[in-house]
Image (tube, rainbow, N blue to C red):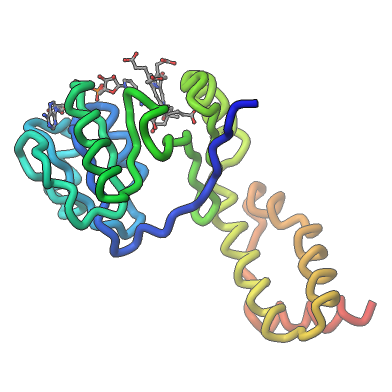
Length: 216
Ligand SMILES: C[C@@]1(CC(=O)O)C2=NC(=C\c3[nH]c(c(CCC(=O)O)c3CC(=O)O)Cc3[nH]c(c(CC(=O)O)c3CCC(=O)O)/C=C3\N/C(=C\2)[C@@H](CCC(=O)O)[C@]3(C)CC(=O)O)/[C@H]1CCC(=O)O
Ligand SMILES: NC(=O)c1ccc[n+]([C@@H]2O[C@H](COP(=O)([O-])OP(=O)(O)OC[C@H]3O[C@@H](n4cnc5c(N)ncnc54)[C@H](O)[C@@H]3O)[C@@H](O)[C@H]2O)c1
């Protein structure tokens, strides 16, 4: 059997992430890094308008030059996304030498990780990978998930997170906690949000709900 890829969710906050190349493909990698708190550097003679807007907003630093050996110093994560397979191969070689995790946009087997398609709804992230076998299929599945999982999940997850924190604070017994957390998930909050009937709960309301549901 072929080896499979291991899914992880990386905390890039405060870490230097470098994208080599500034075309459409680099743009998608950069979009995935935006909002992660990563210190983002783009190294490329040219960049797309969208990347330029990000640079203008101070969300990324652009070094307007071709990649040169040594540019990866201090990086946590690197993306080789130029249109030149030779340059991409040099980037991967330097990253390997420095033990930095590297993504290859044109020769996936040579890199350490591949980029899944993603749907983000607030704290919900859905990532889809077809292990590089068909990026087109990964994209199709992502588009389907985008319609299945709408913006209501952002509000819903904020509600669930707050409720979970209150339960963790109020309830000591692990089994009681688990039972209450399962019950929270059985409520029709998602439907209420979709039908615009949802009203955020106060902490007092959550504590009261816990008292009532604990006794049953
Ligand atoms: C999911 C997504 C995320 C993203 O890019 O951020 C993504 N590719 C997307 C779209 C897409 N890419 C390509 C097409 C044209 C149709 C086709 O070729 O099938 C389309 C569809 C389209 O554009 O409609 C062409 C292509 N892609 C790769 C190669 C090189 C090769 O396979 O050797 C070539 C040939 C280049 C050439 O011919 O020159 C390689 C990779 N593409 C990956 C990710 C990684 C595996 C993902 C996985 O399965 O987990 C991997 C392995 C490496 C990596 O990039 O990390 C994004 C969809 C989401 C979105 O669009 O929002
Ligand atoms: N992984 C994917 O999803 C996917 C999808 C399509 C294509 N690809 C591959 O990715 C490559 C890039 O695609 P694209 O559409 O972004 O290409 P593009 O031509 O739009 O962009 C290429 C970028 O690389 C930069 N570049 C060129 N030489 C460089 C150098 N020496 N140093 C730094 N930057 C340099 C250019 O300035 C440009 O910004 C393609 O050649 C193809 O092999 C990957």
